[in-house]
Each structure stands twice: as C-alpha cells, then as structure tokens.
Image 1 (cartoon, one colour):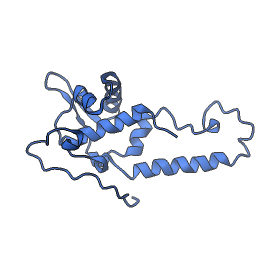
Image 2 (tube, rainbow, N blue to C red; image 1 turned 180 degrees about the horizontal axis):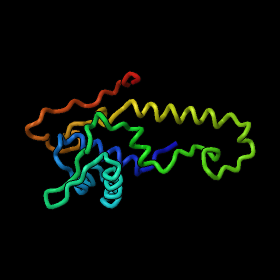
Image 3 (cartoon, rainbow, N blue to C red; image 1 turned 30 degrees about the vertical axis):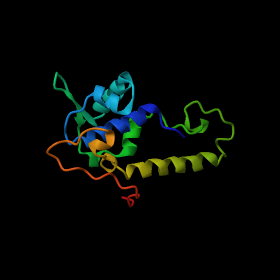
Image 4 (cartoon, rainbow, N blue to C red; image 1 turned 180 degrees about the vertical axis):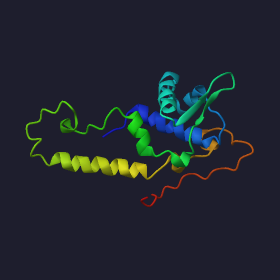
Length: 158
C-alpha cells in the first residue's frame, strides 16, 4: 500500500502550518521549503480548506493557517479526505469480478489490516508531528517559545 503524493503533500502542508505558531504561510513559501510544485500545493490547499483543516486569508498579506487546533486534526481523518480510495484488492472495489469473493478469507484479513492502519493513524494528530521552524530551514518565529520536536516514541492507544 502506498499513499498518494496528494496525501503526502497534505500532511506536510498541515505540519508546516502548525509549526508556524499562527503565522500565515504561503503556497510559494511552502513550495520552496519542500521542493514541491506550486500547482500541486494549490490543489492540496484548496481541498484542505474545503474540508475545514486550513483557513485561507486572501489579499496581499494573505496566506494559510490551521482552521482548527493541531491537536484536533487526526491523521486518519485527513487521509480519508485526501486519498481517492482504500481499495487494497479487487474485492474492495465496486467492479469486483473475483469468483472466490463469497468464500475468500483474504478480504477479511486485508479489511482488518486496513482498519488497524487507519486506527493507528487516528491515534496521532498534526500536533504530534509539529517541528520547529528551524527544522524546515527557517528562522525561528520571534516572540514564541520553541516547540519541541515530536517524540519518536509511539503514543499509547486512545
């Protein structure tokens, strides 16, 4: 299984916005930091804004910021918005023509694995991924206390 670049970019955009302590970020700046196409990031930002994860401020001094606290944005939920589907095998899709589906045990095993994957991601929020501005190669945000890097240790189940 592999996440789409769209989902990868969405998570990076949310991490970057969360790291900026309410300072508005721009698509141009984020594009430079991650080396990602402006056009791709614009599409990602539009979807995240429509889904209520980012808020956009228009105009000369505009930009993007988190629309909700980082601790309320669950990673599995974000992927539910950004991934086109989680069709792991033919039997998960609408065009299932597999003859053994009624007796097959693979679908059950894959379904459990997918549920565990999403369940694990939903134990984490964007707040768990926050880095310091200097971790992105930027100067620290003035007037704020540096945020510690996210711990590598897994969180206990919620």
